[in-house]
Amino acid sequence: MQSSSDSNTFKLDQRVHSTNDPRRVGTVKYMGPVKGHPGTWVGVDWDIGEAKHDGSLNGIRYFEARSQLSGSFVRTQNLTAGISFIEALYIRYRDQPTQEDEDEMYVLSASNRRVSVQLVGKEKIQDKLSRLEELTGASLSYLGVSNPGSPNEISRIVPNLKELDLTGNLLSEWKDVGTICEQLPSLVALNLSNNSMSHEIVGLPQLKRIRILVLNNTGIKWTQIEVLKDLLPVIEELHLMGNGINAIQTASSSIVHGFDSLRLLNLEENCIAEWNEILKLSQLRSLEELHLNKNNLNHIFYPDHDTINKMVGGDESHDQSCIPFQNLRCLLLGGNDIEDLASVDSLNSFPKLIDIRLSENPIADPGRGGIPRFVLVARLARVEILNGSEVSTRERKESEIRYVRLVMSKLHGNPDEIKQHPRFVELKNFLGIEDERPSVGTTGPQKMASGLLSVTLKSVAASIGEKPPLTKKLPAATTIGKLKILCETFFKLRSTRPKLFLQEEGSPLPILLDDEMATLMDVGIGNDSTVLVDEESYGVQGIYTSNLLGMFVLRPQESCKA
Image (cartoon, rainbow, N blue to C red; front, side, top):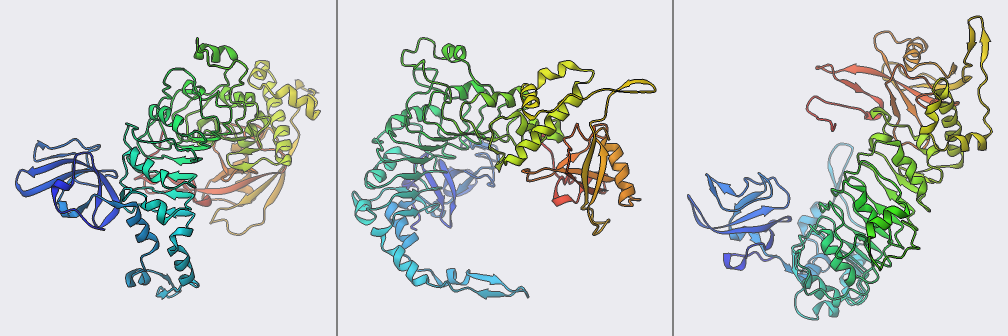
């Protein structure tokens, strides 16, 4: 790539990258002298920090950087303003690998020696890729593409391109994107992630064939999406991760209209805190997947007609017959701040919802006062995939039985508890589970135990060594504290206290059982459950660590999210 050697080739707010590293991308914020340093300098605000300052040096402010360590001054010869689309295409698909590239292709032997690797059929692959007119997919990520190049050159060289990845380049003007797309009549998928796109969408024609558009980390807001939607008549997937979006700002209505073909909308890793913002998407008729992982949501609900009518006000374009989220099948809510059961129960009101993610929310984390997987399965009547794991017929039945028995154990002496369990009566009747009958002892009426549970205890502690699992019959009212004492006896633990984990079907990680007053029934241990027995250990500062699967490790230098 050719580097720029004259400051006149740069302009303010231009995208540039380091001459020796096309992945180090930034924006020009200053050009001129720097006191105490001869010559002309370019002040760059780098996308990824790890620079030197915030745009000021020795008490003099030259420009405003995004963070305290994202700015630096660079000589012009160490920056490049980028290359054309076709130049990048030739670099990626026509240039022969250098000897340096060949030397980098190796594996390490058992004696830690480099063994060169030769790709079988490499010549055939290179020959096929070099026939650019046959390419249907191209990845030009992080090559410094800043412009389309000469008119009609793209259509002549790659006329059959259907999928194009332009991640991490120097594009910022929408008219340049339009020029590229107009020359690719077969293009259906376009990835512009990590390009800092202009907030002014001008010169962009209607993209009549684009079905998948990825705009992750481009700085785009929903106000620009409102402009884009009229230019994307057949869009099916729209990815908007990491753009700092905190509101769905519509142009003339409180409800988002259009997007007649939109099937998947990805808003992960944004800053949306209010569920009312998401409700503005409820009238998108074709929407099947809505990705909201890692936002700031703390409560969700299904809107009734009054809520929708209040939102639309006097909007005459609103269709009263449209059911909110009528075709939504997948809702990903992982990594938010949801902590109430009402939010979980409201998911049953979505007409076609079967794929749900709630992991990394307080409500789904028993260690933070949440509920275990089996309770989630039982409360969610139609869920078929929970947190990425399929809910089998067997898991559903066992979860619902365990859930009903758990609720029954809590109802004794606390009849109001039933208000917290809207599916309890339905499940109890469906499963044919009878009420527990009181027995009379020498001290008067007593509650019957919920029976004996067959529990498998499996050691995973290093100090215990290889021991076969133990299956024990235990009363459902046994506390976790009592079970720990029993495990000390069963596995002959003397110098260390056991740490217990519940291994649940469908859960990728076991659940820590740390409430010693809770009963087996309280924490979801049912018949044929497996409890993993680990051991506690203490570091130099007395901080607990666990050997189990390398989990729950908290080192002194690390911090935890509250």
